Length: 356
Image (tube, rainbow, N blue to C red; front, side):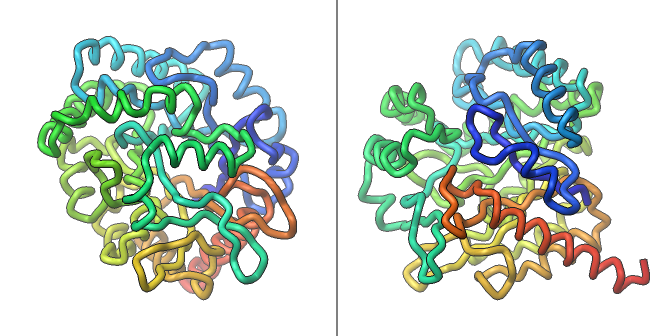
């Protein structure tokens, strides 16, 4: 297991590389070029500068999250082949600096959704919250406006102002796309990029839908054991895999995450590990990482990864804002550092238990 931390770059993150370098057992960062729009070819100079800044700080950078998939590809629209060619060119440029995993998603229009970014917990910490009832009552424009107000102008991936300016138009393009066609569009993309992934030695790791329930009438792709099984069957290459996100999949109590890990062994290239708390009305909020703090059995999750020989990349996913910290929702320093220490401790204990 290689422990990493998500980092949004010097212009977009309150957490510094120096901060991350001081977290025990965190050896690398997972990052992206935040200003790149879907469909753009990433400039070699910017990739090289990003790589140098991180490695000069004493950290590795082998995972990119993410090279966003253009809506024309998801929709199967005219011009998708040119968009895919641009995607592959970016893959080539990332491979040149040693990138080993690309975490991407195929979620239409929106990369993720919560209904509150800074929900106050009784202990005084703040976290992200999702209300099923609220998401049914609010419009995408209203949710985007709420995010902008709550975040104080922090750029939120998947909710960039330029994307929000066209949100109603973009959602409208999906009116005639049913689940079957959406799956075929995903297959088309996979068939095009996986041969290049094999040649470039880059593993493609799709992120599950977040949350795993339909929102704003948009199709879903990865939200259950059955859908993961179907997705992996699209291509039998070991380079075609998933990002195991306990927060996304765990938002549906029906998902048995340890069982999904065991069934998907060998095809999990990246893992986002965090806990959450299910509420009686179906809502959930993101809790601290330990099992006792939420509804997921974190020991069972980590044990399933350990037992199946997982040797890929892990990051403590979203954390609360604690100890008076202000910053990007889900991505403060302190709670994620605690999460990294907790997960590393579980991994070491499992290894010691096997006499290793």
